[in-house]
Image (cartoon, rainbow, N blue to C red; front, side, top):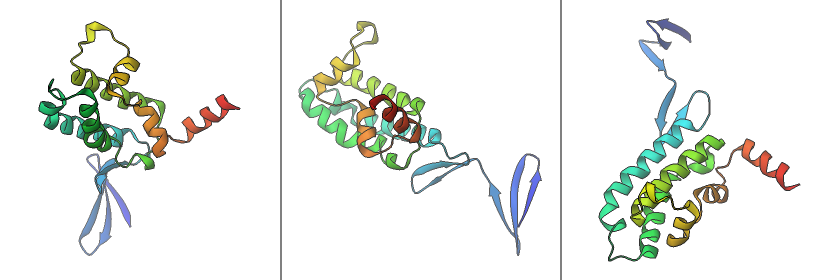
Length: 157
């Protein structure tokens, strides 16, 4: 196997007229994998998928005739589960958890009909819906990476 670099592209010649292109990230079984092994690409992709699912369900998730609790159940089972799919394999950093929290809070605000300028706390909105912080959900499924685990151990004991 000989790596060949030409015009910024790297490929591996396997012989018998077969070449493989080397890439920085790729999609495998629905998950984004990157060369450096971090979860940034995977988290971005899952947030995008969560938003797509949310937009499909907007008529139900924002319907005032449906109770907030029922909307939260629908959100948790359809949107949040899509956002966290495969998260148990992510080596997550704090920035990734913050990105997930930000995306979720925008969706929660939209579901509750709250505008940003109303300045309600995230905790209060989650209590209205009866859902936990997505960071807690991450720690339940095991998507919190080594760095976060070490920080927790240091804080506890």
